[in-house]
Amino acid sequence: MSEGAVTWGRLIKDLFSVQPAAAGAISLQILTAPFIPQRDKLGLLESNPSLGEGLDAEAEYQNALGFLAQWLGSQPAPVQSAYRDTLLRFVRPALSCVYHSNYLITQCLRWRPEEAKEPALRWLEQRLALLQTHYLIVAWLESGLEPDGVRPYLGKWLAARHSGSRPFQQFAKASFVYQAWLDAVTAGKKPLQEADRALVEEPIRAWLAANEGYEEIDFLLRSYLKAGLPYIQVARAVEDWLLGYGTRPGAVYLWKEALKQSSLALPLACQALAWCRANPGAEKHDAVWRLAQSRKFLGPPEINAAYRAAAEAVLPTLRYRKINWRLAKVVQSALTAYLRVAEVSSTAWPEVVLSVLENAFIFSEVVEAQPEVQVPELPERVGDLLISGRMQPNSEVIQRFARWVHVRWERQTKQSLAPTITRLCSTFPAQETIWRSMG
Image 1: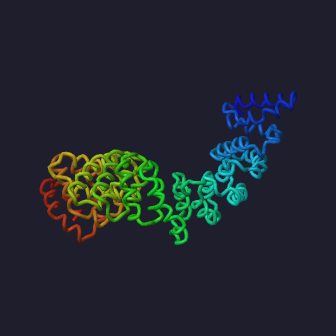
Image 2 (image 1 turned 135 degrees about the vertical axis):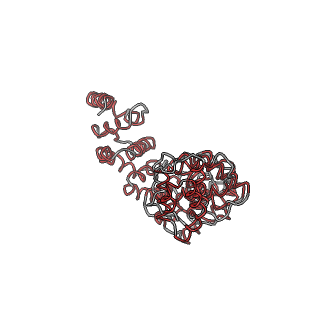
Image 3 (image 1 turned 180 degrees about the vertical axis):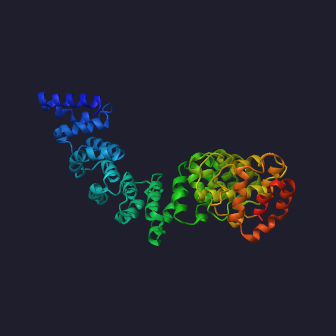
């Protein structure tokens, strides 16, 4: 226990023993005091069971317990185990008295869903037509409880309204409900069922029409597309948001879904590549994945130029990064697509190719060569690097690349390498065995 906790514990213990009435009078102030750490408050509750007497129906007290539940739920398992029973002794009676604010219920749904399940359903039965009910619905859906538990109430809440106001389904906060519903009913890659889709599809379209320009719309759009709902219905909203905010690091989540579409407007495809160029070292190699997703849009000069610029920013970052075989295949595809649009006279492509070749995980014989990378452009460019002196013919990099071609390329596709092999044998006869192994 920290020094602060010992000090608070002694102070409160002394206060209860000397003046119990005074201590009871300030119990609420003690539990809501911002300068007392949450762990210390739990210690006080543990050593002073009467600290919450008579406060169960007080909204401020319930919220204080909600903050404690939120904190405890974020702690390591040993800390949770140490204080779980203590907090539950105070939370259970308070849950039965919730009326003005559902904060305690929502936090308990996230901390101990089964403890809050019945109080949550009671709130939905009695207090459904309140805007704040959206917090409870979202917490339920994010807690892992069955979505069917709130299904009867979801449609009613969306249709509810305050006197003279528009329906809740058009309020900005409704976007969190839509997102949580779609994520919950498709969790574990489950297909979206028609009944689940029907519950929110039309309300989402109405919401989008009523909330044009909403800066946080991307979270809903991502869940919408991830659930498999039709892109055409939200294309304008997706394009507007991505063209406005699409180079932000956090835009990656919507790009991941948008780039799954078979076609995108030219400005949008260029913006996706601008995101890659602006975030080349993004976590989880996201820039590499998005670059590879974008290669299917190559063709128009504007997209080709944007792809070149993005690849020249992203691929060199891989030189010293450890990657798995699945990502290695993606890198191979992204590099091959780059070489198709990179100008031979450019001074940029040699650095890009060298950066990728020097990563021992990418062109390894354990990595499958997909048909799209079994094309002569890549070995030709490697040959150009050798002849220009940028690489040594007896280097481990070259031997590794040659083994990959030998082991992973189809016999028939290797025939296209005959001109490159002949050129290398002529220029570097001492390594002829290596070059012939690629044929």
